[in-house]
Image (cartoon, rainbow, N blue to C red; front, side, top):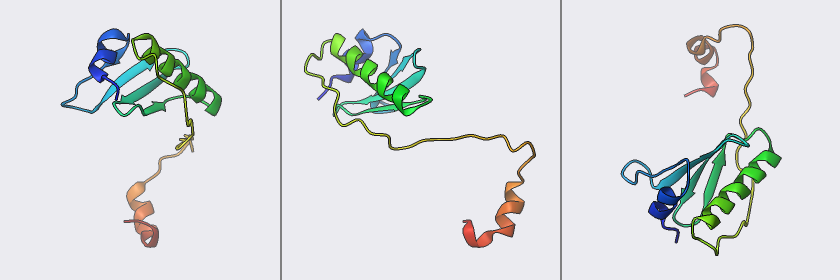
Amino acid sequence: ALDLKQIAMRARNAEYNPKRFAAVIMRIREPKTTALVFSNGRLVCAGARSEELSRIAARKYACIIKKVGFSDVKFLDFRIQNMVGTSDVRFPIRLEGLALDHEDYTS
């Protein structure tokens, strides 16, 4: 298990408040991402603009954790679980009206 307090104390741009959330929150500038590091060794990386940048960022986080004293850290089982897209439709979307018109598909 990872000592999250040690990671938060030694790494830059890392915050840890176990009363609020059971993970260290880390940030890097390039690629601009945020990672959640859990004590079981899992890492969730968010904010990358592509799969490749997400992999690069996750490797950087693993390297940072290694440098702060966890020499046995390995980069394993990388996978994309979620992608988010945004679009500007250039008109207001009235959600209530949409839900009423399509109530079979909403809850």
